[in-house]
Length: 216
Image (cartoon, rainbow, N blue to C red):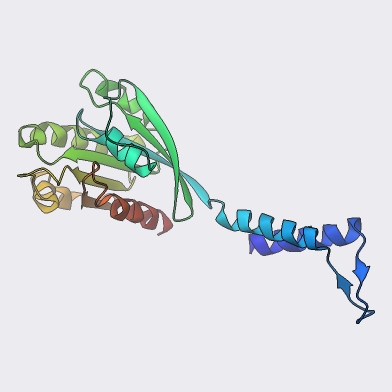
């Protein structure tokens, strides 16, 4: 509707500010100059392709979970060389009509106390887990639990990426969900998605869920 109204307004403005040639066959009709028609069509395409809404996505997880690799995968960037995030990275990607502003915050133990500084106005929380590192499963579970207890993240949709599914012996997404007792989360919508940030598998499915959860 917005696009239609804008188009009508633009067309009316063109009629009032430009001279139109009369058709030689129909004296009561007017012909819009080709260049103006093309300009209208070009503008209409841009309006249709423009994101409907911006979302603030917070990307958290322990160090070496694969957050930055995931972020690069979302931005269609090269993922072969990734350095640990000492502070934070921000990238914007467009998906399903949304502009997703993704904040990737470092996961080292000395940085985690500062996570809370980024909670404000978060639309979706994405938590990345290294499915192949069973020794740190309890640690990552404790960090996630603490996040979900914060008032600033109350009711914020949660997507858990069970990353590194390409590694032999990695826990399945369902096994991680059981270990972290995700089924007990009653105060928010949530989803766990197995993925390989390195290979890109499962990433799109997870982000599709993000957009759908916001539309509800």
